[in-house]
Length: 217
Ligand code: AP5
Ligand code: MG
Image (cartoon, rainbow, N blue to C red; front, side, top):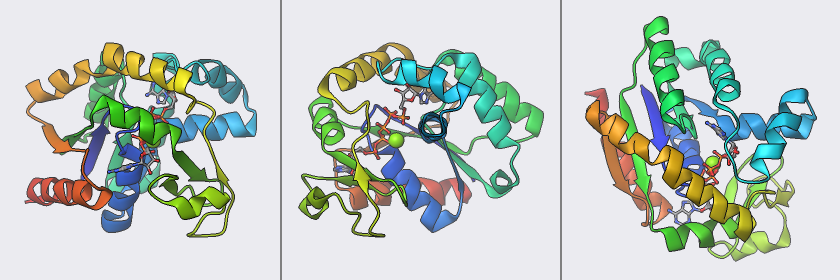
């Protein structure tokens, strides 16, 4: 099963990807996570990426396309994968099409997680992520995380550098301009499945499960 999660910043792509990994054991391909790991490691890729990420701009297409091509060659993707945060432009989507064709693979569903704009800003500024296990929390919905300690593993929680109100506002504008057109792109291919992302994490996952189970039939 090869899936794509499409949605605005804060729609819950990472949260739902973690649940999909747990349930269906798919490889999680998050370009944001790959880029943040490069930033943390201080590699040349990370230094280039940071200058875009801190402003809420997209990292150049050629850079991320190269990363995803390499990631799709890794053996864990053979049993299925979830793309999270890629593609983000029509050029990236076209490149993905070509790469999947070359690999003899195809997407089974593109899941569009749709959330009202006002909720997105609230969610992003309240997000906390665990440095050790990567778990994602919302400090307003889960006040126990305000202590800065991960309830799952005891690791340190941090706030992403791009989750300031100013950067979030630009990320949402970039999403509308460059990424939202992909909804139409995948709708025309007959792959788009919409879910109401305003509901609880469990309700959203129930909608996604239905899509996955029917795509598997
Ligand atoms: P990336 O890391 O992909 O960020 P994003 O797309 O902006 O999305 P987020 O990770 O912020 O949100 P999410 O949808 O995963 O939500 P989450 O589950 O965490 O990209 C970051 C940057 O990297 C980009 O700006 C760009 O610079 C660069 N980049 C990455 N990919 C690129 C590409 N392909 N091309 C070019 N550049 C690229 O949830 C958010 C919060 O909401 C959490 O607090 C969570 O607990 C909460 N939450 C989740 N679901 C619910 C719910 N149902 N109800 C209530 N709260 C919820
Ligand atoms: Mg994410």
